[in-house]
Length: 88
Image (cartoon, rainbow, N blue to C red; front, side):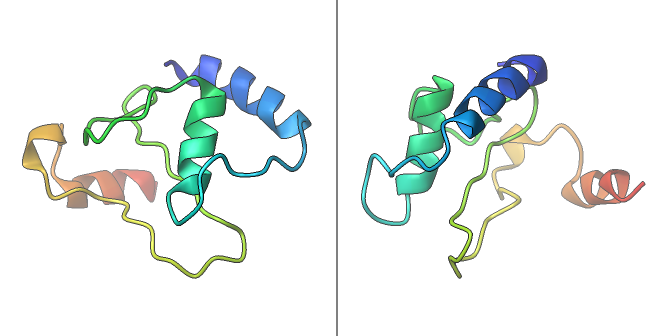
């Protein structure tokens, strides 16, 4: 999925307002968002959207979000370099 496709679909989803999760538990919000975006559920570490991995969480949740994978096969650059590039 390209970033333009994501942006268009995300705006459509946002216009729906509150959407109940399609699955109970901590993975429910991510599963629901991916389903509404038309992204098939997978357990692959590769990015969902044009080189970026999609992350979702509940507003009032207190669970941690993994921003980086330790799977070196998916990295196109060292993780520290990616963080430094984002800070620019």
